[in-house]
Length: 287
Image: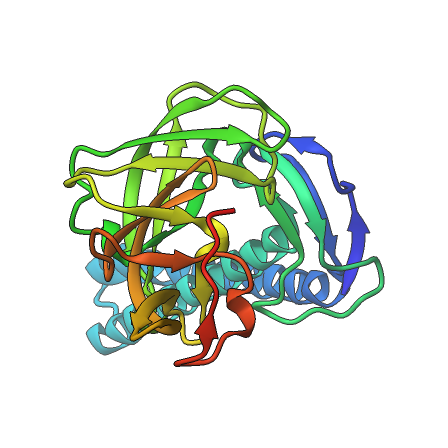
């Protein structure tokens, strides 16, 4: 049971600082009993040692060898019992220490998962502590950019900030193939005033040949993670709509690069594409 909370959300703490205490009444009683058992075992060992010393002193006076061996056996047993009692006492001491939760590193308390008087079990979350000096930036990047990532550059900016900052990549983590995305984890070259959960915009420039790009509004994203556009193709004297699946790349100022699926001269439908059906007649407009 939680007996004391020493911190609030938003508090900055240093390594080793107490954060939370659990009820120690039960383990304190166990500790006291273990200490008493240890004291008794020490007394029994001391008495067994005294008897062995006495037998050794009397051996010159024809003290029975069998009695001496018996006393030595009792001393060995008393010593073994003493070691076991020391281990029991050390275990209860460790359990007592674990009932006070201390900060494992410098950071900020961002979440309180428990309250005073609440029962908790091993493995339950008690607090969330974040190392603000080690925040990472996570971005979802189209899988099409994965193979062309070497030599790419990444810039980031905080929400509401006009300035872009260079960043370096820490890891590329593949996600579920159905999403056709991978996780890009990065860190800025210079420290930024960031908090966990803050929105950050990323701009990734990958290597590759120049190709077509389309307005962001032209993209149709499907629940299965695929992306497509609607193309206008001429059939006799009419223009008809046909859906074309594409592989997209990086985006910049509302334009998204298309790595696969489009050819030079393709006419992409941008307005009204959400309601189109395959083969539907359309009217072209340059607006």
